[in-house]
Image (cartoon, rainbow, N blue to C red):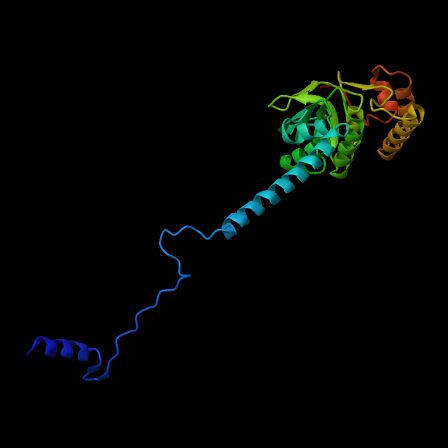
Length: 278
């Protein structure tokens, strides 16, 4: 077979086969606009950024805006009088401490009861703090709250007293050791409002209750009107708790602490059940 015949046979293999005609695939034509490897990008319009990059950029912008709004609101909240104290007591450290006493005999009858002993200054968040401690202590009606405090925030003290009364708890001014033995203590100023919340208010021998005239340290346009408002609030609260209105008169006599004698506290119905021994 000649060279030309072999070339013809090879060319024919692309044109026919036992199963029918077979045509070689057409060669792809090159286009002048086709991209070439390593070719520089066309001049003029810059390439648009990837979609993922655009998405992350918008996420950052939204996050910054949200963070700014939260920071502005937090600044406004903390710039109000007393807001920082409330925030600190709620999230950092409470101004009061507590301890659960499983079995304490308050009146000497031999009947033990569960008690929550609280002490320290009544702060800007003490009412919510007390609610949490009462829930954790699982006190039932007739159980006791033992108090030892120099006073503090008046409005918080009234809310604390309401919480004690709602649960049907009794109060006493005292501290207690782990065995349940009582020790005399002092309860002055706003603490007296917490003590007033007790369904029964025990007067422990040697303990002291101190009252004084309440004032406000916040700037007010009319100090006299503010003093009257505070006096009216205290009077309404004490009356609601079953205490004589004379307690307000005793408070108004001095801006210093006036320690009530057991006889005075009993006459005002501030103490409802005296106890001769601690």
